[in-house]
Image (tube, rainbow, N blue to C red; front, top):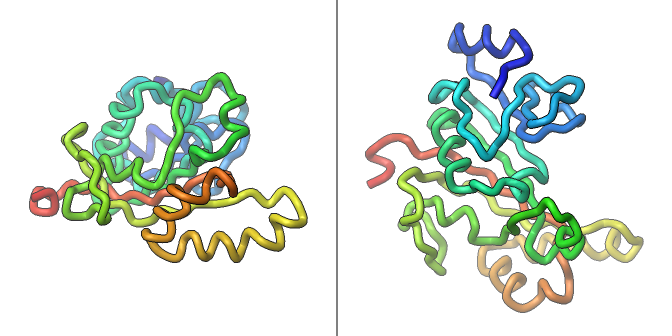
Length: 207
């Protein structure tokens, strides 16, 4: 890991909370420091997300944004632990990744995993999970899942006309999302899924 932009070091030293755009590539986000494993133009922090973010102190990050990056991360659970460590307790983590029904994603040889409705609940408290429970013992850190939204293609005229309404129905509530994944996703493929997570750090919250 290497901090390229001196402003990042200065903010950390002054204990100014920073925002991170993980796996930014060449697409930079206003008010966010760009982090990527390649030394591309405009990248502020060089880091491999399969390894610890050693130069980032605990609770130094206010917001994290990641768009179509985590499907490339092999050491996924340790990475989620690092996210939990560096983001402050009321910080916001927004993650966008391919939905498991996205057929195009299978063409990319660098993709190592896919995501669905329940993926992030494996990192949540049992009491915060929906009706269908998933194991929460894989990690000793926890997040609150604030949002799960399944998003669809808009590549054709049909999709532009039909998918906004279909998306509203699918995302009406958790039950509709669950029905979509179980019964409809083989017919109407989703493009991606969006999560918003909040780290749980207060010991009382994790009881």
